[in-house]
Amino acid sequence: MTRSKINLQTLANSSFGTKAALAIGRGLPFWLGRPLARLASEIIARQKNSGMVRALRTNLWVANDYKLTGQELDQLVLQTWRKHTRSLWDFYHHLNRPKKVLQLVDFSPDFQTLFDLAKTDQQPRLFVTVHTSNFELAGRALALRGLEFQILSYPQPPGGYQIQNKIRQESGIEMTPMSIESFQKARERLRNGGTVLTGVDRPLAQSRHMVQFFGRPSPLPVAYVQLALQTGAPILVVACVSLPDGRYQLICSPPIDVRPNSDRDTELVGNAEVVLKHAEGIIRPRTSDWCMFYPIWPELVKDVPA
Image 1: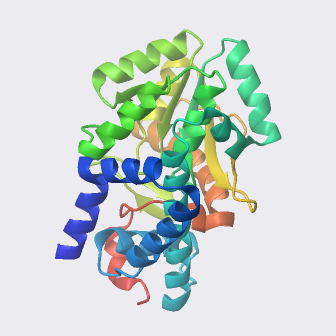
Image 2: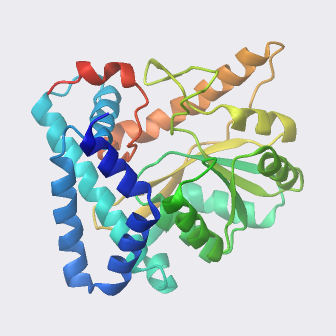
């Protein structure tokens, strides 16, 4: 593990790093904040030996079918970091500006229909998300528009994640890092006609199941499939994407009904791979929106064009 990898990843996930981002977002004027965010993205993107940049290069290389040259990857990584730092700036700067949040986050027609039903019909729905564009701001917009939902988040969150979870909680979102208790709570919410949200594209280091994602075995979560099977909730892949005018939009897949199988591993993996196909369909047309800084395919890092 290189020194730059330790420093960059530790800082990004630390309470200090998150508090600094929060202070900058709240304290700097708009005309200065966005240029500063852009400068930060360019500095980070040049750290090609850092773990976060190497992971992003690998993930984007696979998502683009291994076709990009080293130079093309560098440009795509820069575009992705620019979008990500701008998203962070927009989130922290407008944290206490609810009207601005609602102006920045649009709903696609399909998602608007889904949203309206989820607020009124008391049917269970399991939203699964990919880490695209400004997913933090999108979650805040959902809460501001009156959707009550529980997030099953990454277990044992570090200091920076704890602060982010507290911010989400203050927005009216029920934050529950993954555990047996939070899983049970999510199951009860779904059985009572509620909405639960969790991520599908962050790798789990000790995952027992490998699922196909962009054509490769990947250590991604599958527990949400069990949740859907136990409650009868349809799964919907929900994502925030960037718009050309600088705003953001929530989009979704059609409902996915899970299929039981007598073999438990086949049941979990097979249904997860159906969900991940929809996730691929969201990511492929806009890979610069995909902010996945953890290595899904670490075995490929050395094969990525320099």
